[in-house]
Image 1 (cartoon, rainbow, N blue to C red):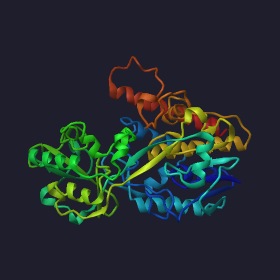
Image 2 (image 1 turned 180 degrees about the vertical axis):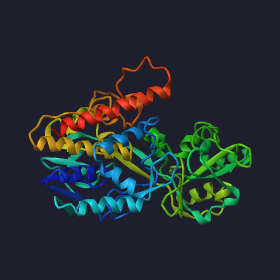
Image 3 (image 1 turned 90 degrees about the vertical axis):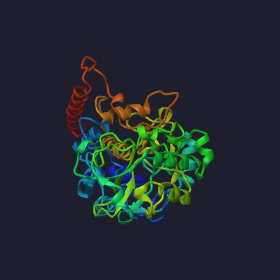
Image 4 (image 1 turned 135 degrees about the vertical axis):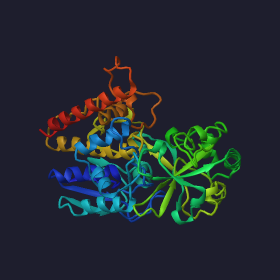
Length: 427
């Protein structure tokens, strides 16, 4: 029986894949105990509805990664399809339905035994997928053996739909692309400047962490972005381009994205924050459409722990000092829910091969999943978490000048290569 510790996306993917291929799995998870970032007793919990990001196969590397995962029979992608909610070009889901789908798939599989307890020691073999908030004895055991690093991650507030002032907002997707999935909260120059001023002076929960520069660039809190200049937000998450209200482009726009299928909750796009709860209500309520907003969840800040993987992991996510012990998820240095799920899925493939005493086959670096696998294992003096992006894919198309055409060719090559990889590794 293969132990898999952690039932987030990475652990769920690995456990389910192995079980579907006839391997008995012992899935160990601390729930119903919760970390500071979790509240749902089900497995595969997401922080926000849009955690799975873009679904554009040809224009976004994360969209391409999701298609690679679909072709590798991903549980996450099956759950996302079942729980999908409208969000333009993004793959947004009803988080409750999504987690329930994953939990049911794991609990009803006859090859999976679930143990509800917090692991305290490293096993001799199996998969560690305890995520960025690994704690207790297991965290200490990992640190003693491998050392660890950390950074701080932030999530955005969520407001109730019926508390939004729609007389001061409008429904539209940028450039008219989509099906009216976003609520846009426009601001005049004066309103924007008042908001930014309040944001910069608001009290934060753990100010000293930001001063040390621990925050991962892709999860930069909105107040930290504002410190880079008063117009930084207008060229970032509050950009008004592609949007018009009453025939005029606003000075700045905050977009709200639905958090569930019923459309009763909306998340503040790009507003991950470390402000104290009372300050969040005060500052975000300065946006006209949110003057009377009721906050269903405030943004939170939490520690993310990850290994210095180039020193301790191979490209198949196995430990360099024990080829029977694997790691998966954000703790390996892949950043993002999709990337974490992908690492768990490919980890399942590698463990299956090892169980069958077959040689390791790492996906080619022309695929996103293969490029990420190689990234976490390649020598890197300044290693930090990595999202899916076209920059990590293998070259060979330098003569193609048109950016859209090049990405299309990269995507087509990746999907062709992932099909060949799947046939080879399961052969």
